[in-house]
Image 1 (tube, rainbow, N blue to C red):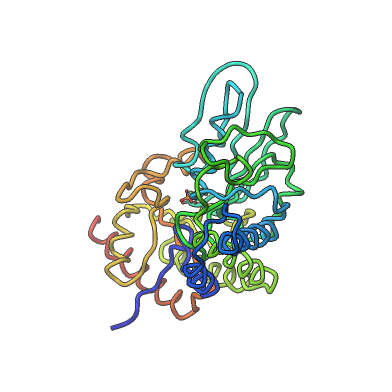
Image 2 (image 1 turned 60 degrees about the horizontal axis):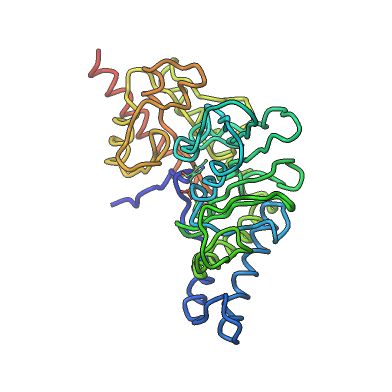
Length: 343
Ligand code: PLP
């Protein structure tokens, strides 16, 4: 039996060996990072090493990194800003900005820098002075060069598992001097910005993954990923002449292909490909089992039908050309079948 092919890296990336090793080592460190004794200091050292690794990958100062349970928790701070209205990019990640508010007075902006469904990269809009900006850089980190220092944003959110770290750990990046009201209060950890004993094991894994991801990016491994994505795009687009490759030619992540296949539901595509041995997605994998027409595609102007016929294939550095071509063959064969059934 052929091994399965994982093509859903935007949902989550496989755990990196470096992250696994760092976590295994951290499991044997007994101390609480807030304790002053040697055991505590050893745990603190792991957290601070990871903070520096994440800062280097994101292009910010270590003191600007606040560890959280993931990007969703980090983004919750946006809802706690003393503003009346949080404006959200309509193509931003569905699950992230539930704290949207509407009202008069001062505003804040939540902006998805790289979209998880389409891979499209969009610079944030111009804004007036005093309007805080939070960037969702979850999909960008490790895949494309990004510098928080240069972005001009007040805040950014990051998630470890998208670049080969463990699930359930992430960070809020807060620009030096920007005051936030923490979502969690208690023991005053993370310089009072996120209370609760740090997830030392997860944080150590996140740091190691961030460093490895940065090395890979600098070594150019995503250029090959982009080549394979383009080969795949060509192969799938040639199956019929009416598929739409969303964002083709625009600035987008090197690994993401979002394809609308008229006459074939995204949900059915995912199931057919799963049976054929491939893991792909019909959009955002945000809540398990939920498959709806893509809100992102609708916000981009696609109709309900098109938005429900999209598939997202997202690659990563371990994916081979053989696997990509095998996927293309299987997908094209299944699409032809689906069209002939419908005819
Ligand atoms: N933002 C984007 C663009 C994502 O793709 C995801 C994960 O799917 C998140 C935020 C949420 O991250 P986390 O699961 O760490 O809360």
